[in-house]
Image 1 (tube, rainbow, N blue to C red):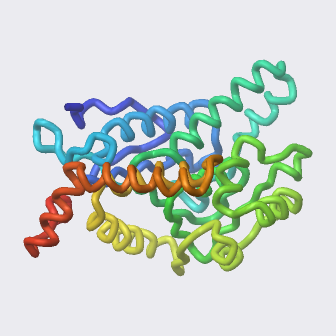
Image 2 (image 1 turned 90 degrees about the vertical axis):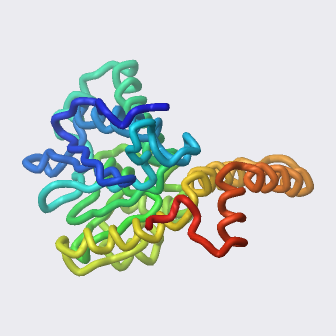
Image 3 (image 1 turned 90 degrees about the horizontal axis):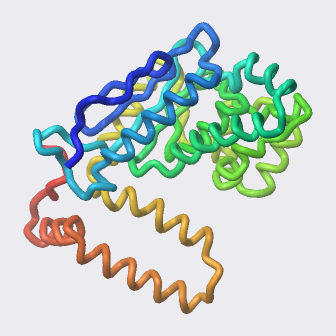
Length: 285
């Protein structure tokens, strides 16, 4: 079993563990948490480390020392703004880089966005201020986003004569075709109510001080769901998104998927606890 000890050392991202909840806090406040190579790399390393220690992936609630495996991940940013997008120096360098160097930079970003989007924990965003470009990409990759009334989100790349291609698949999946196309063309900032209406975020609170209470309420709700069910819901959705065979083949695949879930340790525990009228072992006491 994997230990919850010895996480990666970081400087620009702060990680804290509270039971089965992990907080990742962007800590580059003086630059509005803009994404530079170091910040991106640290986030990638932490996402990998936490994913490997998720209860849903391991089908276990605790390590050998009794420390809880992870079930929820909360991403936030220090200061007035969640994330202002790519660091200005990264953008300046991109103009002088070779195509191979720019592709390597893009590959690093894709590792970040896919690592967050595919993370086996239930991922929550607590955002304030601006989320621009890559910051909007982070928002799009989360399972549930809570924002303050002052948020402004933009696929701002078009203002620089480029497009949100690397973040595109994740924003497209969140918003749908027409909305993604419109926001990519406009490249302008949308505020809280439009972000809520378009599905960029799920919830709005009045001010930054209200974020933690809203996050904790959601965490408490998620902890009543089986951790494997949370992780496998992402696999189920991805298979639906990518399905290219017949409807009959899809129905048969869902039968196999359901049968496997019911026969799993978590499925057996869930059904037993229901019949015995007791809390399942994954529910907080």
